[in-house]
Length: 320
Ligand SMILES: [Zn+2]
Ligand SMILES: [Zn+2]
Image (cartoon, rainbow, N blue to C red; front, side, top):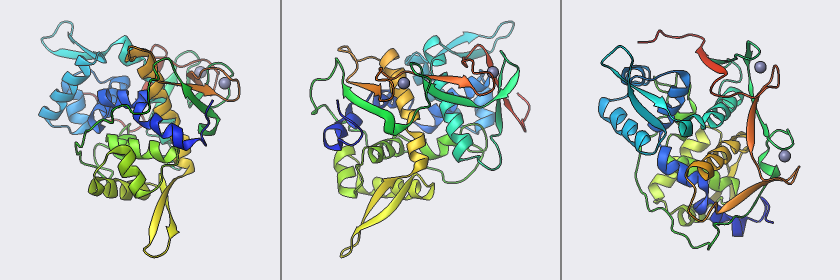
């Protein structure tokens, strides 16, 4: 069994990870926001368009992609000629991921002001703070407690690195997009930022190593590193003086973030499984069980699911 520290071998995890496949489906800021918005109750084209200030063409292309990948389904709205987009069971299964995003945002991005979106747990009627725990032992999930091992689909470390060099815009402001549920999307709204942070968690820290591991261009990498340092996800540390060279080290904020790609990976193994089965398995070191994550209510301890919670924006903004 490999651990967090065996980085040489498990760098390949980054390339082979299930989270990677999930990013192929939902890996850009707009897709993240559409999914988060769907949990929040958005179902009509105009909901996303007006709340997130999205262009018609971007919104339609993302909605199409999410339908093609089985996350949303388009149906007529009863008693109207309008159409609505609803989460499929596969899409609804991303709820634990969305709640982990909320939990991380609340802890790290809204620490002093409180999250603008409140989650109410119908079973106890309380405004709740979601808490991610191991389904087997109930302990909270820490990155350092997760081991990776070869799964049934493991064949070779030499699997193909996605050759995407697609560039997407990164906003560093708190504009219309970032001002609602999903400030997360401003930070991680592109696959490169997500991948660089994942690499840092596996201690791939140097510029040249990151370029080689992720097959990323130097200017895009430099831009994303600057962005991630700005947001406190990576800390720069000098490891050589002349010429000056820097390493990019995952901060505690990033360690806490790690459960989000873990959950995306668990979701992908269930809904987008490779034909031979998962390439890697995650195991919880505390209980030795294959990791599965559930999200519970801090008030009553009951589990949170799509049928028993509602999201409420504390300063909302009427629905259109
Ligand atoms: Zn456990
Ligand atoms: Zn509760």
